[in-house]
Length: 222
Image (tube, rainbow, N blue to C red; front, side):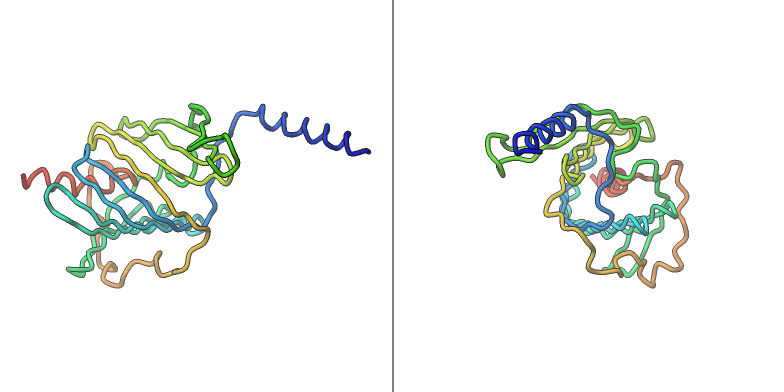
């Protein structure tokens, strides 16, 4: 096979690949990065770090932000396999255990997600100027809707936007992702969480509504 034939075959393969619609994907199993979030229709804004372990089905989220006129810090450990999450207060050495709805795990594109289309973040004019992404949307529990953006290459999550009648709009943007986790203790509840009892709620929280309690608390104080 001569060089021209090789190029022709490669071109056909690339054309065939390009003609296929993007499929729902799963992010790398171990990831750590940063994020910013706005919930409660802008009432709560924060930034922090996030670690994800797909093997153990766990996520650690640390937030530092503003709720109304007050600053706050909150440390959350989400254990999807047990459908619970811990809200850890290091200042008071206390821990709350709450129900977690695991229908939607934001580190992958759900199989029933619908593709809105592809776009370049930045520019496609030259190599390195932009990133090709896929835009997906679908339904959340509690009559909610979501829009999520993942990179075409690597299936790296970038942004999430969600709406539920109870909590309003939530927007999450992620950045500085690296593959792997450095601290396995991130996924083990602190010792003082051992005696925490599961709080009874009408509907379990999703990752998007985990900060809703902070927003509702601030509303009551105003």
